[in-house]
Length: 428
Image 1 (cartoon, helix red, strand yellow):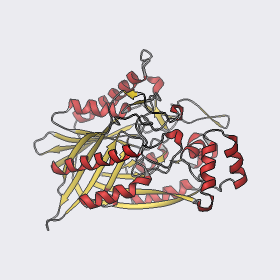
Image 2 (spheres, rainbow, N blue to C red):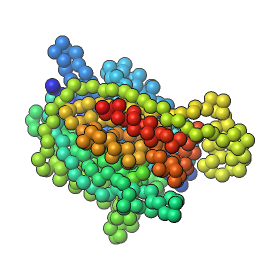
Image 3 (cartoon, rainbow, N blue to C red):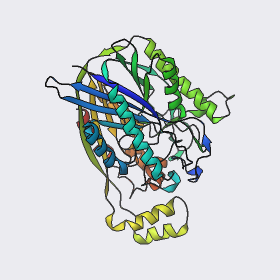
Image 4 (cartoon, one colour):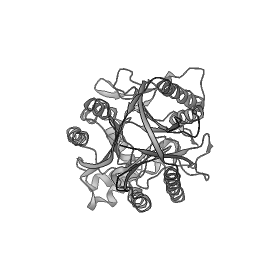
């Protein structure tokens, strides 16, 4: 099997002050400045057939919270028309940085309101990046390695039957940093994929930033020869935060701390790249789509919703008003959409349009011996998908977040088994 790959990096920094996405504390105010520019990085994969036809796929990483589900039909249609890219062969991942613009019009204003002009600009830049990547596609070889990093930490801690705040160093997390390198025939590094599970939430200040993930990729690109593009693909980090308190106490500025963690991650990746890596053979480049509906608990009654809305307490009031307006058409389930993209022997990506907690990511890796990398925050966003235990205990992921995501109800405890069954079918 052969594999060709092209790559591109384009600047997607908003030049006009728009609200940033991810922190209610910003109160949906336009950003105050730019601390670092944000980028969209794209890989175009192509596999030529003997009859002259070809298969193709695209992998995109953007320094954004996510890609909006409401924009995905238009984006998929554009990519199909321009390059024949089938929906199941598209991976649009957000690094989940909380310091970039919102990309969906569906959510609570305190998550940051989307700006229509910026969305149009972003989607134009997506097309630009793919066109550049298509133009420089060339045969590549593939290598894979892995390192370990503890810059992420479990953020849910249980005490006296309740959720308590603060990092939980004894809780589940995924320390693996998976690294995939694509090399041109010249031997030069063409592109690198870095996969890790950790929320980029180092700073809630109202400034544009690529966060620690962007800093790491920029550092790696500077250290590599030629025009290599390094993509950060976000893992199942729904309950994993950056371990901010582990930074040196001498660092008091958020953006110095961002640089610190970014350089720590880059150092880990460099160690993997400098060591012997496993050579991987391309397989038939193919995508597979799947979906699973997850049931919701009953919504409050109209009277209850009206009472909540009348109290004027954020974020509940806006959510209640939204639910009242959609009461007659309220869905009783939300659908997790998945794509599995097979690239090489021992390397597949499994996307999900949700904030999936780390327990599911660890389970996927265990069941596939690490050959399948979970890539949530891809191809849209419906909200958090917690475990049965998390739903039972409550807290941000299963309860409070549902108001910000304008979810029409909270998930049933049964969703864990339902999702695991669907994931098992996707990785089978």
